Length: 216
Image 1: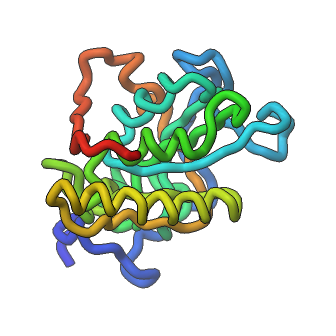
Image 2 (image 1 turned 90 degrees about the vertical axis):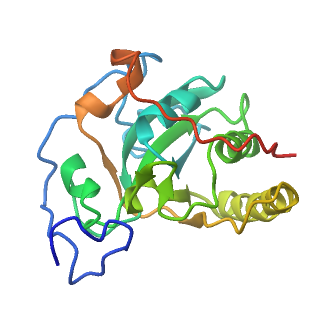
């Protein structure tokens, strides 16, 4: 297979890139906008008690991270790679389609200020979840729509929200929602230049793929 020519097909274990045991790049320390840590492991006393974590993918992660850091009650965000095979991938590797990862946003939020249901509404209304392995002109497995949950309750709400939004999308003339919903496996932070990219590059590329179909 020619490198990068089948970017819309998920690889299997045999065709995926091998990756590496350790992360080969820096991530950064402090969120450029929120002033909170970028790396927020749940077992290191970094995240305040009672806060929750979820991971979403809805296209190019630069613009989508901004979408979520602007939501009141979101404590920290980061961008990274999840849902794939290759350990500790680089951005360039993910873009080949041979790691299996989606570009995602990891969200740490205070459920007393913003609920998971609120975040699901933001998720559905800010992309087209019927496009399979792309968003607009961005084509490849890394741009697929995913909801990666961290609790059984998140999984239940995510699945219910998909069915609920499908009704609205069908009424609006759209096809089947292709969003993959599953428990989060390994999450790999992306390189420092990608973290809060649009705060560093306010005129950067930020496509909007919302359908204008309300989640109600």
